Length: 158
Image 1 (spheres, one colour):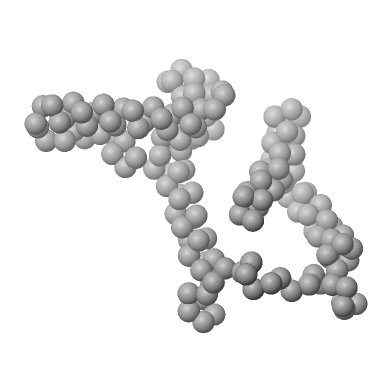
Image 2: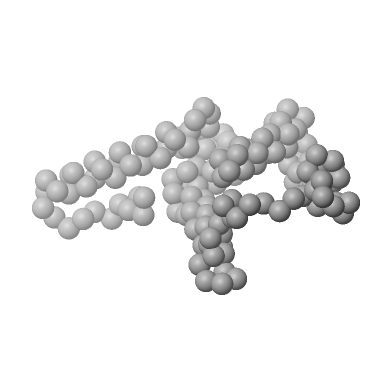
């Protein structure tokens, strides 16, 4: 179910991305306008195929208990813990990783990002993560051979 939600979210981001890249429409405006499309689509589902067959009121049938996340304590769902972990992971990715640094470079100016070596095409997040890990490993091997204090590595948080 989580993977389906991830796939749906990725697909929902495609129209604003396409409009931004091909027609230069502001992604904020296009994604805000998609909120109305989402609301109408939800109404279509709730009044249509998701409507509870036992009731005339527009709501979906109750989900079975096995699809719900368990409660940690009464009234405190484990979904809150998962959401907090996802928020921390997203913060780390954007603020502390090499991917976030490259994102800031590319957002500021793609030509400057290319000039300083940020990868501006293809699958650059995977490549720069692998590169950062490789550089950190090489620095740790150099330190291990030299028996000195560890170097001040700019990637030690990786």
